Image (cartoon, rainbow, N blue to C red; front, side, top):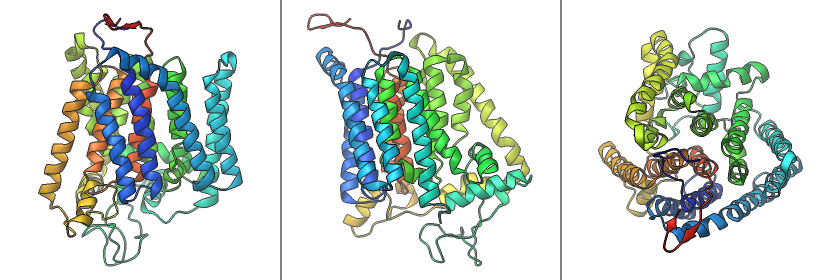
Length: 458
């Protein structure tokens, strides 16, 4: 039963978020998240659907129609993504077969499985873990990319009791690379910064590195656990089907192979969503974990009111923020005090030193290629981001339900705005947007309502 004062979830928003996840997934599949006009077009469609999802007024007939379309749309989208993965992205028979098994077990959830539901979901998650592990062991045992070396080197340093932020890796891209800004690479072709991730992300991969010598075991587990939490957050089919859609994101194995940290951020976001749906007392503490995982998690701060019921959101917001802040401080302050200069340079300063990337999947790159190679100065970039994110926040706070599903939908819109108008926007960032869109479906409370023209929603 709905809590007093809590707004109800919108089926139209859930359906639109499923479509948004499909469109963004196709956009990053075209060139693995790098810029192309067709990829930007699909990203634009996903963004437009997302805007409509949060701004469309509640209409009884539309809600009824969307409720009927939600399950078949999720099933069709998951089946389409499975076909894409099996056919082209990972053609190895073992990975293709496991991907097909994931799809079959996931889509079987549309039937009345009763006692078989949980065992089949468990088998689906095991199949994903096998596929994800095979993907990086067969295709990328030692990827030549900095994010992998950052995490491996940071975990190794922690195991021997050294400060991970003092570890400086060799430039993996060669002299003169456009990937780094001025001052990032020294004359010996080594980076001058340590791992540019908050400490929690390094701590999360530490068991995987210590056990298997590869941080990507943690990334595989993070994706699988996130999907499991989607299936458990709410009773009913939407969560299970949203989890299948999430697992079958076309570039999921590429994200894992390259060791990007978004699966870790997705896991802590999933903990936030699960607690918001099922265990409210734990919500402030896992919010702290989420904010401590990656820098752009702060985008969620203005949206936190959507996680609280209207009658007492003011009384819950400040204590929740205090608890979350305590977790963030406990995780970061020891590393900051260990070596303030190295910590600040890696975790904060490095983000502002990164250059404008001509291959980013961003509207600014479209402007660059269509208007004489224009690169926006920092003030123009910050102004553009402020306008885009501000508009997204205004639409989200006005149009999203004050529920966990509404919060995830708002996070999807704000995340899309932040990345699509940024100087760097690649597959990993949009992978997180896909995860939040899937959570906007998984967290929905399916209403038992009747509709009529006279009464509206009752």
